[in-house]
Structures are given as C-alpha cells and as structure tokens.
Amino acid sequence: MSNEAKAPAKRKDGRSPWRSSEARKLLKKDLDDGVVPLETENSVVSNEQIYLQRPQYAEWTFKEFDKYLKSLRNIVKKEKQKAEEVKEWRFSEARKLLLDDLKSNRVSRDVTANDAEQVYIKRPEFMKYEFDKFLGYLKSLREIVNKKQSNSDRDAAAYQKDRLIHPIRSHNSRGEPRWAGSEAERLLALDLKDGLLDQFQSKMDFHASRAEYRQFGLTKFRKHIHQKQRTDKFVAYYSDRKRREEAEEEGNDLT
Image (cartoon, one colour):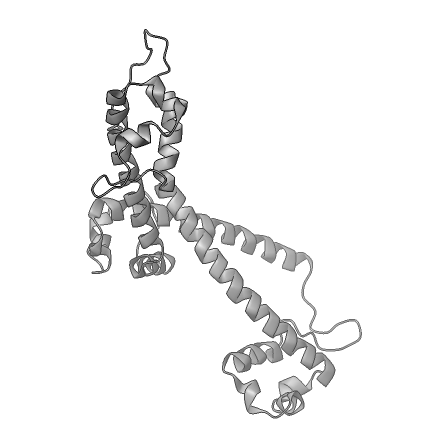
C-alpha cells in the first residue's frame, strides 16, 4: 500500500483528485529526473519556489502541495533505492553463483520448492542480501532458467526429429568429406582456442600440422578458419548481450 498522502476521491469544489492529476504526474517526473531535488537539506530550491514553477500546482494551496511533495519525495526515494538494489544484484557474484547452481542442479529449479532458507545459507555471498529480497531473486532466477531449459528441450527434440528424417551424410555430392561434425572441425576449434595458429608462420604450415586438416584443401581450410574466427566473435558478443538481457528481464520481474 502506498504511503502517499491521500487526496479525496472526489472533490466538492470540482478540482481534480491529486493522485490522478496532471500536477502529480509532472511533479513525479521532475522528482524522477532530478529537476526537483529529493533531499531538502542544503537544497538551493525551496518548496515555495517549486510550487511556483508550474501553473498546474496552483490548483492546490501551498499547504496541500507541500504535504503532497513530501509524500512523493518519500515514494521516489524508495523506488530509486529498490532500483539500485536490483541493479547491484544483476551484476553481482551472488547472482552468478546462484545461476550456476540452478543450471547444474545443485539448487532445485522447482519454483514451488520450500528450500529457500537452505539455499540462502549455502553460500556467504547469498547472505549479504536480506532474506526476503533473496527469496524474490531466487524465484525470479528459477523462472528464467526453467523457461530457457524448456526452449532448449523443444529445440533439441525438433533437431533430433529432423535428423531422423534427413540423416547427415559423411561426404558431399562431390565425394568430398563433410566439414560439419568432422574431427577436423573439432580439432580446429580446440587449436584456435589454445592459440596454436599463432605458433605457425603461415596457415599453410598450420594446415599441414594435422592429418585431419589435410583431408581438406588448403583454400577451403582457410575459409573454415576465417569462419570459425568470425563465429567465435559473434558468439562472444551474443553471449554478453544475452547475459545483459537476462539480467534486465530479471530486473523487470522484480520491479
């Protein structure tokens, strides 16, 4: 329930109720944007000056406006404090650990599980947060992980069905070995990750370093190197963006 000072539901003098008035909307926006200071201590702008800033405020007496301003200030302060707490959680070590625990099933994904206290004391990073707030974070992350797992399971089932209908061939129509799924593809991913390409003077020497690579022509092998490098850059970018979107989604659930 809001702690905001209550205005009459219907005014006998025909004036708009404060809660639904344009004046309140403008004052709330000014407080959110910092145009009107949240703190009164050491403020260079008095409440009287704020009252005179917009003609919409004149519908109320200064005494009424002063009461509503004080109430709105408290509301905005609490909203900003909550937003900061959620933002801090999104990028915290505690959230990373809890997400990892859920993905690896060290913590149950069941949103109805009555184990929040046991999870809470599992790691000291979790106990840095108030229990009631951690309870909301846990519930939100469980829903996110379950949603992603459901999508992943559906995609995997569709892929397996497609493979039964259209089995993967080991060679293409020209009799050349298929790159996708080959041992050469697997080894190239590992070698690039380990930085082995940089140890060779040329891609020709790198191509000659493994029998699996030599099954493919040098020109095509070079193309696979470039393709893998581009893919890795894209995956890194996408993973980072996905992490931020996931954190944003969790934040929206909590606010």
